[in-house]
Image (cartoon, rainbow, N blue to C red):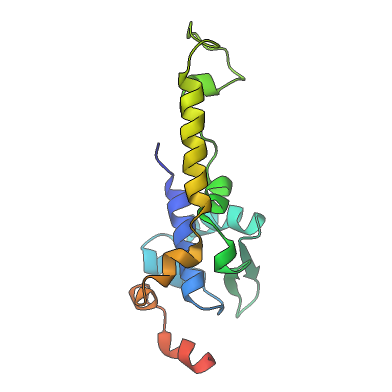
Length: 153
């Protein structure tokens, strides 16, 4: 299984916003920090905004910020809104007929379902806050002006 680039960057955007300590983050700054296009970043932001994980503030001085506390956004929240599905084998696809003669009598579907459940369980145990708290230099690495953060505290 492999997560999409959209999911990867969605987590990174949330980490950036969390490292920015509640200040508005700006799309050009985030795109520059991660070396991605602003257009792709807007694509990444759409499902995050729709799910309430990110809030957008429009206008000249607008930007984005977390939609809720970093401690309350887990990795499953992100993956569930950015990935299209988790069909690990054709037998997961109940809508399409399968040519597999073992459908209904095979343990593969059960094993994969159990594995996927374990994967989701682990994702639920890790928050965006967990990802940033262990890196004191994260703001520096992302190019966030930490001097401005100190002034606000």
